[in-house]
Amino acid sequence: MTILSTPRGAFNVAGQGRRDAPTLMFSNSLGTTLDMWAGQVQALDEHHSILRYDTRGHGGSVVTRGACRIADLADDALAIMDALELPHIDFCGLSMGGMIGLTLAMRAPSRIRRLIVANSAPHIAPAQMWNDRIAAVRQNGMSAIGDSVAQRWFTADFIHREPETIEAVKRMIVETPLEGYVSCCEAVRDFDVRDNMGSIALPVLVIAGDADPATPAHLTRQIAHAIKGSRFELLPAAHLSNIECASGFNRALADFLK
Image 1 (tube, rainbow, N blue to C red):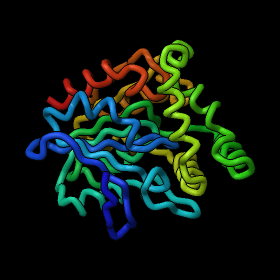
Image 2 (cartoon, rainbow, N blue to C red):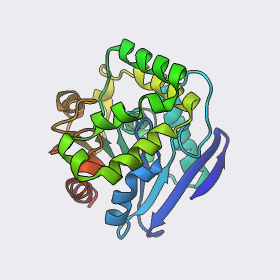
Image 3 (cartoon, rainbow, N blue to C red):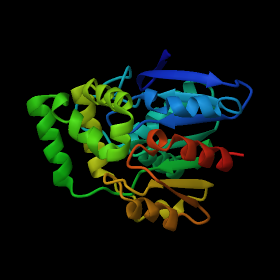
Image 4 (cartoon, rainbow, N blue to C red):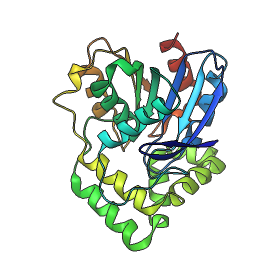
């Protein structure tokens, strides 16, 4: 991993795979780090140059105090691409990362070849849910939400089968800088592209989990319905489908990126 300096701050990045292959950039969910994509690196690095990064406010990247927007996080991704001299990439984002991907596809379509949006939504209401979560972490710290968030991100069966994985995800949540988490919570709370995501004209794969309570499949499917020619894949998983159903997730990506 490397700390990459950009005009927008310093970002923790990791590169693996074939340097002479097309770049596939991964963007993490709210409350995680680039480590959430470990299962994708192993499966895809033979045919891709893999670029992962910690979103602003997460992991080893710059922390912002105060509100930010998903558009700001999309500008961060572009700054990372510019610093690495990448004119265009394939982009895969999950949840908040998917929102960043949608924004990139609308704001800088020439920089994105193909887009994967997983377990995300064009808008997640109500705002009070996010405000309550912000209040909880401000009052009691990130440990106040570690258990409850992890429980929502995976099915009960997976939690029973993979306790070590669940603990690793909880650590990511609890170790997320509080101010960074709050700032990105506000960005996700205020995100709404229901009226304009239909303008996206790129090849798009949309992935949903059939047991996802955070971004239910009917919300994720709205993205596929709005973007002409997009593909839709429903996996047997909750919110972090790339972890819970890694084989199906990786197969869908490999087929889409051929």
